[in-house]
Image (cartoon, rainbow, N blue to C red; front, top):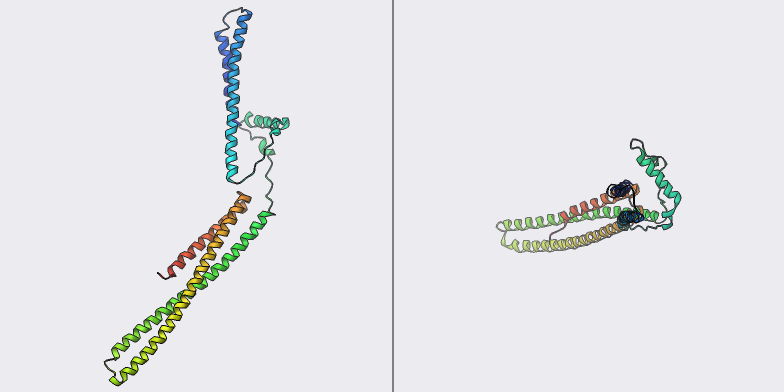
Length: 282
């Protein structure tokens, strides 16, 4: 309104200046013939016609640019806008706009009357698709918590398996060192029996180690499955979040839900970083 009012004032001053220039440049004599008056009026008509046409074209183009901005924003948020051209000629609404302009610009010290009668937006309807999205998000969050608990359990089992493997390897090394040390003190006839005993122990240890390796591989496969499940849940959460953004736009419920999802994603990223510390190197 301020922009349109300013432009309108400038154009009116331009039209006034056209008449003023005519008075100062042409109306210097006391009497005029009919032809002279017609010439003066025709010239004034051409100037005023040009100014008014220029203002109308500029106003139309300005409205197009303003609507283009609104349509671009609506397209970004997947909104469907509907217009009623007949409302542009609604005399009652036009009078309301005129009253608003009068109340807004009559006195800059007074609060506009429109603030007292401005209607408030009705609350969003939480039913239908929005309610289904909320339930789906809650379900995904519960599944996310279950996967996090399962991931912690698998992480603990993998850590215990690695510790057990390290202990068995150290025991084998100690046994080999003891065998080398005791070879100088045992008798020749007992050497064969000791070697057989060591071979049996090594065979048993190797079997145990193989079992531990298979168990570790199984745990690693479970960890990979858990990671895939987490990625799937993240993708579902992301899709649900985007769908919810389309429905809620910038409501308080939308912002709160987005903050919750962001925290959950950060927790998942932290768990993945912690899990990466315990993954065996290739």
